[in-house]
Length: 97
Image (cartoon, rainbow, N blue to C red):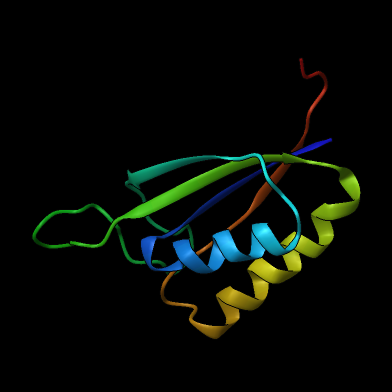
């Protein structure tokens, strides 16, 4: 099993949920209105007057065989509108109950 953490511009929320549904990825936790900025060229998303946009993020734990397909779909979204901002980070899940 792998944990996939996906921070993204709020504009991606509906599209991301559709991807999860189509891939039959049912379980996830979603945080609305998180702040951050991209590590390379991304604008800050602070929800203030200077930087009014906000991010959200999703954490899902999925079988190993679904990871590459999910990452590819996220990458495709990012390439369509790079300035919006979406990333995905994956790590091993050792145990779950």
